[in-house]
Image (cartoon, rainbow, N blue to C red; front, top):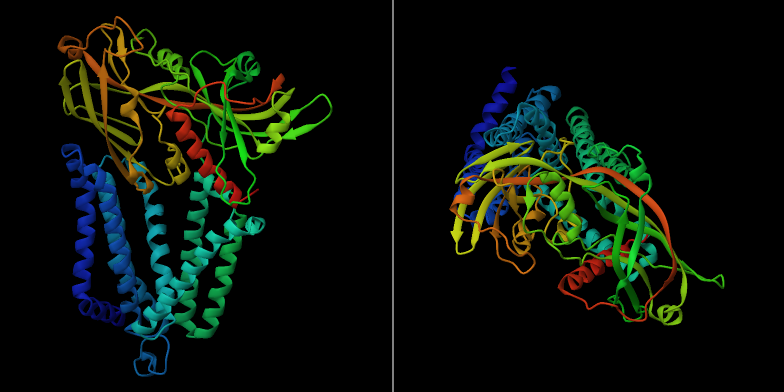
Length: 593
């Protein structure tokens, strides 16, 4: 024990200046996590850079770990002809315990405590703190262990840095090659990582956690082997085998243990009578972008999807259609090319208004939206086939997959400056209320604790974030006056999701939003004025779309014909929708099923 204590003190004194900088970074992380969120509610612009600052501090912490770990291990090097054990009577097991204790006390434990302290200061419950422990430990150890392995296999810091740079450069080149290969050799994409994994956020999170846990466990075993045997060549061989095993199990992994639990809708006559069709008077034909000059020009056909037979107050979000084809009387079958999984679901669509009114019960929604521009891609084919089959009647058939939702009130906040409410893993604070001629603007700050093992929170991917550019159908904020039985929706233009910082996955997310409420618009007449008397008894109400089921329906449309031209003029949302479908199809082309 005296030897271990001596080694700990020696390393602590030798690295004291680096460790001072390290603990300052941890203090900065805690200050930003607590004070930064409070500043974000006071300074509206600060919330835009808060996630960036958090990631910058995390990057600097990782950089410090990359430097500190080898300095701790290599001061008592395990390889080379000048290795310490030739002259110093320290047991192998004692050295392993001393170095492990040093890394745990200096690097791992402070990071864990800082993360838990920030979460607790932001309202995390005891259960959430317990859920955060394995996530934080696995995340940090998965970063430390690979560099600890490299440090045990190299004699000096210069060799450690050189080998590390070579490995980093090799992985960078391999990543570039894997990104470029699908562009020029689409047939070889089947040997690359499955794109569907990245479309399933919970499965991707499950794979990443399993990979991190594997790195920690196997890496720790390799470090222990090197400390106890000092057979460097054998340890390197084991390392290569372990790396190949990790690649294989990552590609074959299918256990989605982090999937959000979904309540299935009980079987009922209303649900069993669901039917799907399209508005044949609303058809849009658009050209698909060619990614190579040699590609055949493709045409995309979109229409309004209509779902009938849903219980009152429920709505659907289309996920994807498959087995799409046209069957003609002469026996010819025309199959659609790949259809985008993206659906233009603008919140201004009237499909969401009845579910909102149902959730509000006796309170009347005074300014419902009446837009009907939501569209779904229903067929995709090359230009020559469209020219051949246009206006020719046949039977359209497809499998439609969609989720069923309904709105629930999750929060009611008095419309007063500084009012707040916490529900689940989220908190909403009213930052300011601006009264202007004919308009009332409400600025709020949303705070959400996003934990890996909290299965009540739906996981998101970068695909989801890239597509959430329309006004979101969840959550929905309204101002409600219960005494008068009246409610207002914000103008839809204020509800666009354009926060670039959302690309960062954080355990604690904050976002400021501003909503404009007015009684003047071009779709509703004779709306009561929003004045001081009306606002005196008002609340800010939040509705969340809660998934209540998933359905898959096979449907057909008789006497359907592919149009020769669009039956409606394209609008701005259609152009955005075309761009998103283009991105979706490009990825599918590079990674075909």
